[in-house]
Length: 210
Image 1 (spheres, rainbow, N blue to C red):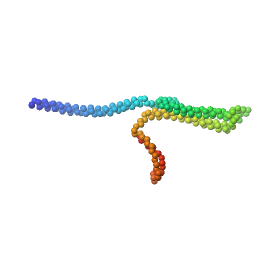
Image 2: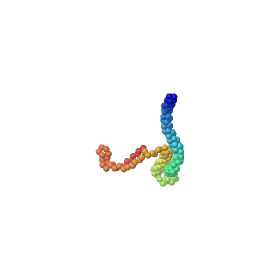
Image 3: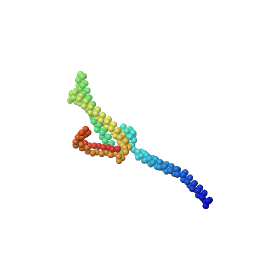
Image 4: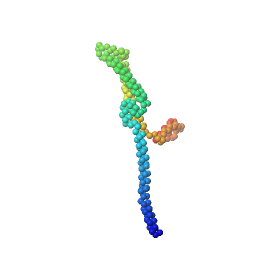
């Protein structure tokens, strides 16, 4: 028995010593695993986002493509907007060039009538100059000139608008709409005056939360 007691005591000391040494390493390993798990989850989420955004259009490229009419909409794969873009250019272009044609026609008639008055022996055979006097020709010429300029301005505005549409449409692919985004529309009825605050009024209240 006396010989067994020292051996048992040695075994207990070795067990306690090894337990004291191994406990910190186990706790550190557990802590490292806890730290590594969120990192792995974040990396997985970032990879998933990159995969989903890989097929999304770039706003910068959409803007560059937008300089070619309707090309920005094709780049964004919004093909249903093409008839709208073409219709806008068709309408503004029709009015611009038709007014330009009338402007040049009446301008030529006015210059012909002006030459007839200032140059002796010259007879203006322009049918418009024979139908209208100089003042009428001048006013009609100015009318078509203003319409022509306005039509070209509208065409330029439509050109810029379709570029902005392509850019904004590409940006909206990255716009995250979650449950926190709410739009509430409700009527407001205030039948009586509140002194020093609000007068009586009726209207609509729009509340946007994001």
